[in-house]
Length: 336
Image (cartoon, rainbow, N blue to C red; front, side, top):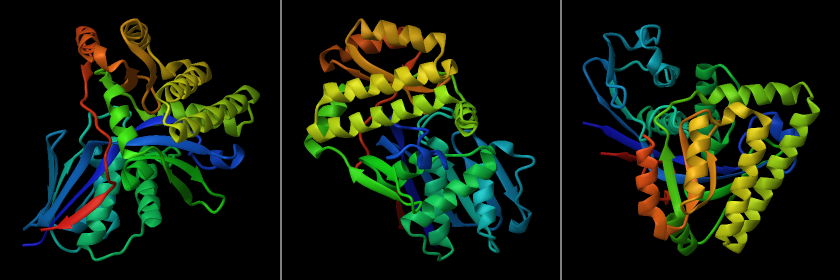
C-alpha cells in the first residue's frame, strides 16, 4: 500500500515581516524579511482508503465523503484550507489524509502555511505532479489566500520550504533571493538564547496585516515611514547575522518590534506588555511578538543562565514555553 509522509517546519519571524506582502515589496527596496525555521513541524500522511477521509489531529475533527468530488468545507469551516487544497487536485480516487500542525492554532508561527506547503507537496507526490520550490510556494499561497480572503505574504512559505535561517529578498521578477544566515555553530549558540513563549491567546494573522496593508496602499505618509523603518531593521538583522553578533540581532529584534507597536497598537496586548517588562527585568534582552501579533507567541533572547528563572516567571503568568530548535531542513516528502 502506498503511503506518503511529508513535513514542513514552522517559523519565527525576526525582522521585515509584512514587507513580503505583494505589492508592498515593490515599494520598499530591498524588501527584506529574515526568519528562522523551527523544528515544530506540520506533518501530513496520505494513504489509500475505501472512502475519502480527512482527519485533523490537532482539532480532533474528522470529515468523510463517499465520493471525492463531493468534498466541501461548508460543514467543516475549520478544515477549509485542507479541503480546498485536496479538492484543487481534483481527486478521482479515495484517500485518507491525516494532518498535524505542530504548533497551536493562532500561534503566529506560520502553522497554517506550513500545513499548506506540506500538504501541497504530499498531494503533488501522490498524484504524480512535479512542483519546483517556487511553484510549490505559489500554489500553497494561492489556496491559503482564497481561504483567509485577505492578501498573504511569502515568508511563512519560504521558511517552510527552505528551513534554517534565511534573509529573503523578493526580486522584481516575483522570485525570492534566499540568503542563508549564520554558521551551524552560531545557530547552536543562538538556540541557547532563544525562549519561545505561547500566551495561550490565539489570534488571526490576517487582521493586523490587512489594516497596515490598506494604509500603505492608500498612501498614508506615516505608514510609509514605518515600512522604511521595518526595512532598516531587517537590513540590520542581516548584517548582525553576518557578524554573528547576538546583541546586534537583539537590537534589530527590538527595533522591529518597537516600530510595529507604533504602527498598530493592537500588535501587542496588555498581557504581552506585562510579560515583556517582567522578563526584561529577569534576564531577557530582546523580544517581539511572532507573526501579526494580538496574541499567539512571542520570542525572547535571554541570558542562558537565567532560563529556569524565566521559565518559572512566565508559567506563573499563565503562559507556557514551547521548546525550540532551528529546523535543519525545509519541506520533505517520503513514500513508504
